[in-house]
Structure formats: C-alpha cells, structure tokens
Amino acid sequence: MTRVAETRKGKALVVEDEALIRMSVCDMLAEMGLETIDTGNGHEGLTLLAEDPSIGILIADLGLPDLSGEELVRRARGLRPELKIIISTGHSAARAQPVFAGVTFLAKPFDVSGLRRAVEGV
Image (cartoon, rainbow, N blue to C red; front, side, top):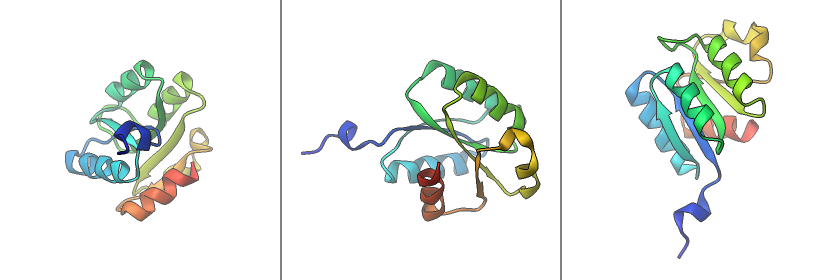
C-alpha cells in the first residue's frame, strides 16, 4: 500500500480571498499530488511562507484586499528567491509590471487542466 506522503509531489501555498475559489484550487492541487496550505490574505501568506521552507509553489490571487499582488510577489521573492510563483487573475495588464518577470499567470476562471499546465510550467 502506498502511503500518502510517498505520493506527494511537493507543497503549494494558496493565497486567495474568495473561500470557494481557495477550496477549489486546493482540491485541484491535491488531485495533482501536491500538499496544500491556504489562507485568505497576503500578510498571513507571507508568514506561512517564512515559517515553512517546504513550500515550493505560491499560487496567489492578484486582487487581495490586504496586499497588492505586486507587493506580495516582491515580499515573497525577498523571503524565498527560488520560489515558483503562479498568479491567478483576470487582469492581463498586470503582466507588464517588471516585478512579475518570471511569474506564471493563470487566467481566471480556470479548470484542473489549466492549473496543471501552470504548475508543470513553473
């Protein structure tokens, strides 16, 4: 029998203020074999990121109420320069900002296949 820990492919932090979207993203990531932790705000996300070195991917909403997507990415990179980052958003103009160089964008709404492509691409 295969234990869950042996099938996991890493850990993702999901930062999304909409609870239903956050739960859905976590479910999709679990289907893909990733362990997840999640929060509804950027400040708590940064705290979790600082406390847990096993987080390899940050998946965040661009429009968080407490912290801009730009600031979240800047601070996350300051804490963990090697972190893989996926921003889920419906705002395509954000891609032009220099702070988002090297960030994967995932257009909302997305399904498990779109999320899988984004995760595999980072």
